[in-house]
Image 1: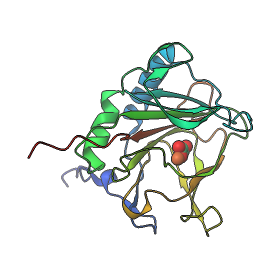
Image 2: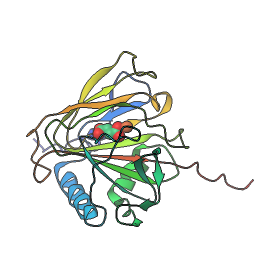
Image 3: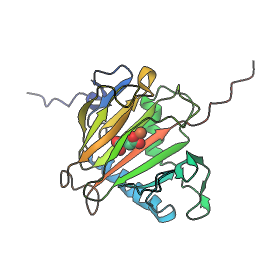
Length: 223
Ligand code: SIN
Ligand code: FE2
């Protein structure tokens, strides 16, 4: 019998999450691609070391570390959340978004304008989590957020448009890619918990999440 090749692109088919506009691509990145991406992310940390953000008003530290790649970085400052071209911690621009991430955006974001920000969330301590929130600091709300998971599996929660709305959770494993867009672009979401030791990908353990965002509205072509 001839050896049958695995169907090409099979892992690039989304599964239904039950939310219109939220597409989950399980195993979008194979093991070598995940490994290469982690190496690029760790290299980026040399110029943009992860830091612990603090809540704007209360000054309470988050349980995760963050940094950014791209022209604009998402930051939490005493005055509020927003985007900054400058990494104030090192007084320098953020490193460029790795080409492998731009390729994922091109493949599945259905947005002709490139992402301007890759927010890096590092769930690197026991109990690291992210409370329910909306990604609402972008002007380009017609562009989706594309989220790439690397390392330990997490329980990801998606709710409605008010914090108290009914929510449901599903797992995000290493190599999974999630697109949050369309009518779900402003849904509440968060990370309930990360399962320690569920992956050996990230040196020292933990989970890395990369979210690609278009921040500014692309310039309209001249008529
Ligand atoms: C986020 O909502 O910004 C991050 C979500 C995740 O870590 O999967
Ligand atoms: Fe988010």
